[in-house]
Amino acid sequence: MTNGQRPAEYSPRTTGGRPSLSYVDLGPPGEEAVVFLHSLGADHRMWRDQADALSARHRVVLPDSRGHGASGWAGPLTVDDWVADLDRVLDAAGVARAALVGLSLGGIQAVAYAAAHPGRVSALVVADSFVELDPEVATAKAEGLAGQAREAGTAALAVSYVAETFTRTPPPDGAEPVKAAIAGMDADAYAASARTCFGVRIADRLGAVRAPALVLWGDRDQKTPRELSERIAAGIRGAELGEIPGAGHLSNLENPPAFTRRVGDFIAAHTGMRPSPGQTGNIGGS
Image 1: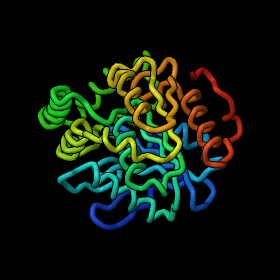
Image 2: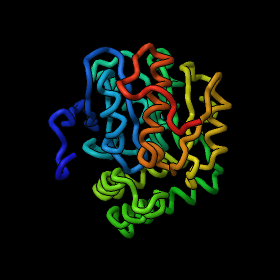
Image 3: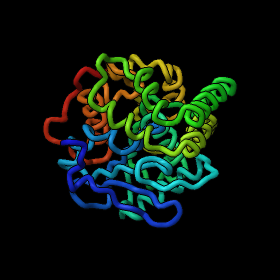
């Protein structure tokens, strides 16, 4: 992006309805797409490196979760609401089948959708995520963030989140759009999203996932320990587990080449979609 402005092709579209959901649609037309689902507080902009690379040959769809980015808000909120929201986005975009790539909150959404609609998911990538937390840990995380959003405001929360999450100094370029997205959220929408995210209990849905699955973990991620990714991989039949080196919780932003290559190679191998130019091979990943 230049001077904070999105190129015309990054202009969002909307589903209509309540809440109206926003998404960006890139690349060549078709009924199959790669769909990227962002983390809590972020929006579609966190996927810019991956979208730029993969949209050369693939259709790429970048939704904003409800209450995030340009999407509207309506509560209360459940995991199944996220599943229904993604279904609405795919229908509005005319996507019959999708390879889902989700990170953190987006990983939860991707797993839940793949379990509910196995015939509509061609491949699944879950990064730096979880499907269930210890209840005490979940409550502490959710209430801590919800309280911070309401008491200090989302702008202050955005600053602290960036300081605590990125492991590189200075943070990568992608940190600024994440900070801007969190700062721009309504505090109530953020609080409700945090409570639903951290309170998730969908480990029992892993066995319903039928798509080929890749579970990724940034090897510096202190927010979601490796064992949470191991649990996801163990619960999905045939799932692969890999690491993104030199990357923390937002591993796609801290090591974009390795993340993009792992995702591009996996999608090409399991969906018949070809890798984008310059995105073959495994750089720095396991």
